[in-house]
Length: 491
Image (cartoon, rainbow, N blue to C red; front, side):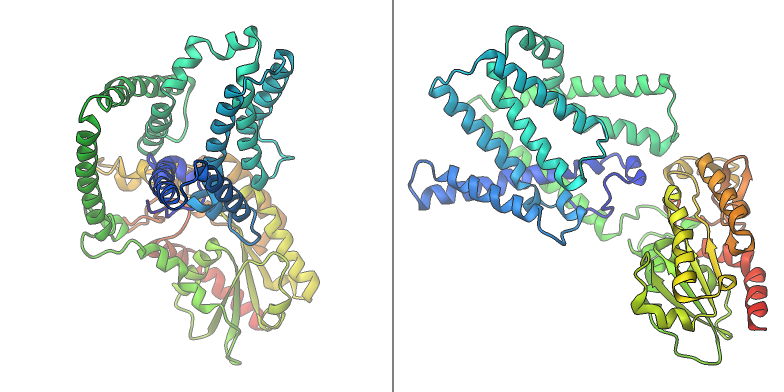
């Protein structure tokens, strides 16, 4: 599986119907690789419990990797070596359960019940409630530990608790849990991608109902039947043959789609055409300003420094599209949030600094604080510091494409969060002419914004970053303002 959007919990990933299947890739990798290694170890070391020692070693190694300093959250989340300890914990828990059963170890029901209930409540709180006191990195190992304790103490709970946790309805949910996992994101993601970002209670109930129905069908018509089929003579071999053939076909189709960068039809509004577009087209445009992460080299030109993340690179591209480089030298600096000491010479050489806000509008007050930090710490003139506001163009491009056959397609507008408008107005009042308002110029009405430029091109390919056409549109909107600002500061 090829993961291109590392932040699994990003809002944009809620619209991807198959994003959650990354975990199936990890599971399959584990079953194939670990089984092969187990067989190899068993052959090499004839000892009966060689698999157990191997599991313990892999568990310790994987957990150590997981806590290794400098490892990114995405690596911990997606890559098998950092997740192996979970699978190993399952193997060790199963082995311990069998050992306890074989040795007829008795645990008082009262003690077993208390530990079981306490662990289960803590587990549910961690999984379904945002417990702020538990950091992200430690949360997963705690969930694995609590899950193991719940499984180990289950055989020793009293009848009343057993009646609650083992009732037939919960058991049925457990049976179809894999199908529920597969179908829920497909159903909800497809709806959000194709129809609407918001859900009424009626819509939510409908989507849940569709998910349950599809899960029941796939469980009884596929999972259950496959499970019964492999018990027959030659069933495993025939099923293996079907799986291999299906895998080859699906993989072949996937490689083909990947080889053409996923472009299966022309999308003129994105300047995307079959056989002529790479999958990094818009990303490369946004990343181009990285090349300008350097000190100023001219003396006779006006020095403009842009500080920010990918939204900063968007604004950098807007400035570049103004075609004013005959009089201006640009420099780009990735947002450092108060770690500017090694760039203080570049800051002091700047005649104008743009500090840009990011996509998370709830944290954008910190961007203003950071801009003021530069002013206060390095004595940079406040009148030469401008904060560029955040922007958004709906929630999902799929909701744009689904209307492409409509006669008013290019007049389409999409809603953005009302809170974003409120914050934008607040920042505008707070900073006055030291604030660049990116939202008002594209507002249609209320909290609805346009998604197409006047020449029928999409402003954004992902609802947050700018296409080249989007950057050109903003360049046209703000060119006069920026030129006046530069002329004023030159005096």
